[in-house]
Image (cartoon, rainbow, N blue to C red):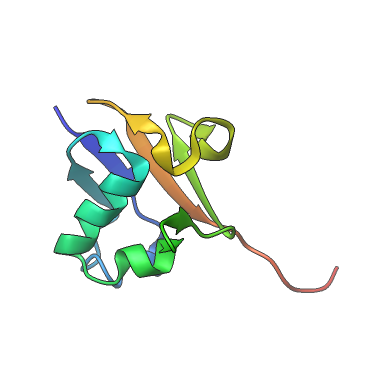
Length: 92
């Protein structure tokens, strides 16, 4: 069994239009780096200096990794990782 990673629309240019990727279990940071080998540029958009960028939200099974172990959060077989870029701007 694998880990499903849900890719947001803005990053699908890097993944060749794929909105779901599968990878092996491990730490969040290792999963991002592994996906970057197949889709160069992905890690650069998500991380800086080995840390998830502050405007990128990452969830494992709907739990924000910031409230778990951050980049060190362990993802197991069958888990689902969601990458959600923060949206800001505009006037009300």
